[in-house]
Length: 560
Image (cartoon, rainbow, N blue to C red; front, side):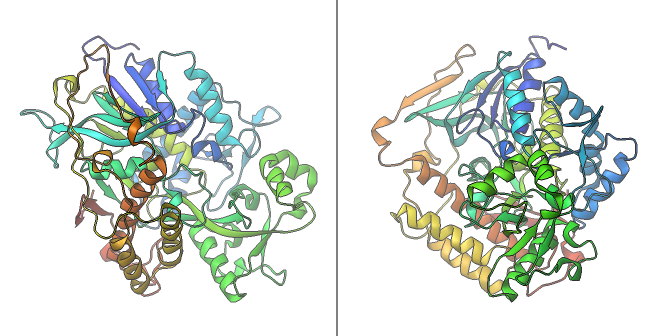
């Protein structure tokens, strides 16, 4: 299908993980003019590191209804049923798209190989390259992208979204603005790209925490930019901690699929302990297993627990989990003959920029897909291997919806950066100390277990924390856009300021914005649910059986 000239749009996709690549490929196939910008190299993203696989009901002994039930159960009463139904119902056709785009899923004879993972009632998890599913998918889609007209800008750091007042008769916006582009930092210069629509696919913010499975670039840049622009966000108190990261520097992820294949968790004495925590033992939902491990570690003076996969044998481990096998060898371990030390680590942001089931945010012209979005599918706890599926499903749906949305022509609107978020406290803190201190504070007070006392301590620390960043780098810098429809970029040379402000400082400023939101949400949610556990409110409450939604600095309890 090709659109008419009147329907063609200038689309800017920010992020090159599965969600961003899906959106870019689909938009280009429909005749839109697409620019894909990515923070690092094109093949660098959180999606690339996804090991376990992609869950979808594609086998005869499975069903969409069963997948929906499992996803809702993992979400601990906070998932939005309609969003979950869309996720699971669209799964099979999106798997077909991935195959059509060149993804070669592993096979067991003539059929796709499939795995069982925690809290799934059926083995429905497809994988590629053994335990390198994300990498295999991303590389296949990048190869496909090379045969399209999509313009790619690598090593582009998002400074801010560009906003403009909503025109009379235009799409409504609670913030009174719409998004008309994005400002980037590329090779020491500022670059403005105008677009009728901006699709955020910037991933998560694992670098909030001292221990994380996320790569160094996961600093919440898209979420922070959307917040500054006035987009609504919700569920930010829900950060998932993966139960099993290798307890060595770097926190390398040990996939859920390993426990799905039969590996067990052992305490310091070599005894299994998860059966005493939950009847599902090692295959309980991630939040339960992670807290079970944390409690066991506390009971044994902080010593790590161990994951015993020796029963699977060397041949199976090398064939099914080649990436993990290589990582354990690099750490001086042989997991085919000895249990390996594991610990929980920050893994996935369930919350994010609030969207509907088609990726629309509260700001006209802005769509969000993948981990940066809060679609309602994950609720309080994400089901294993639903993240890649979410990226594929909603990356596609956002583009489909965009074609029918009344966005107008962004090139006719004068755009500017939003006003900066007020930051209190000192400036000029040492960047290394600030980042590491932030991560330590978040891990200690806003991690697996929380309390009002700890959260207030984090809140006070964050109120005083600051990083020295020129304000026109983080908002408030009005500029004149000199571009037309044939050249949608506006470049201003800023190389003279590169030494004063680098990307590390900008990332840290974004992390501070996101951290404040996480703490605010955790304080407001006076209950325990899914990944959010408060020792002073240890049980779920019907009062909080809905998302907590925020718009800039004004919290509001809202149903959606």
